[in-house]
Length: 316
Image (cartoon, rainbow, N blue to C red; front, side, top):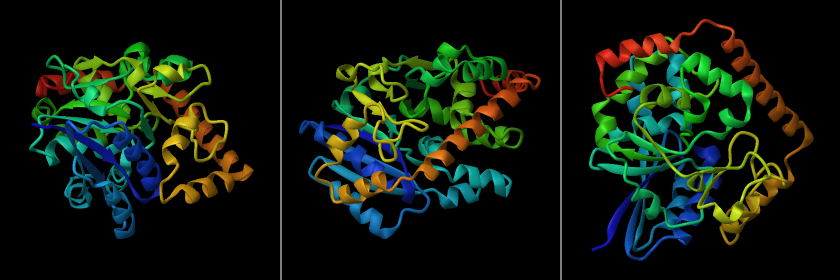
């Protein structure tokens, strides 16, 4: 009997071409002995893009789409907060309460490439933890972000986890009533620096199993051992679609070849201008300045987290 491997992605129209490369890499490394059910959480993917993504359907791979617009609209939040939740990086938070038939699942960002059978990652023994994740490299390598998570979130920079690649215990996450906790937090905090990562780390800092970094190699420097990379994630400005010198970009283009969108991808790379790159730098500096500003404020998240734990022991 084939093993069912649920894989969750989050996507919008702007990320569809990335997602096609990621799914292509997953399929290329899949096993005929498994069935891979891919759920794409979204709010606005067009019919044309759904058709392109559905090309990956085959005997052991199925593509399914889940629209989150009604769910987000039903939340008792400000318009601004709801608009924030319509960004793909927040979609993962809805997965446990939307995909109720799964006890366990893998979550991947669209900007990833898979170099091994994702079923191997799915087999991770969570040991009763809410999720498995790799350490976030940006908080380790960049002192400003490390200082931010230690002072404002009360989490050691070496134990702050990246949320772009996750193994989820869906039952534990459902018991934690994640969306209810999110509603409460968003009424007080914007999570402007590390966004969804802040929220999940606050909630599950004591309920995470750390993965080997080979399952989440973040392309943030050129000194990476590519041979050990079972999964690569392109983060921040390390974007193979915009920068020809992107670390580990060769993996992306290897899986992009042969896709119907290959010429579109190459055109985007070739057409990315100096002005576009300057805008990227400005955005990076804006986030950095926000982190510096937040470091100077009084601790705010840690004290509230004590209260949250008292109300819901499933929250760390």
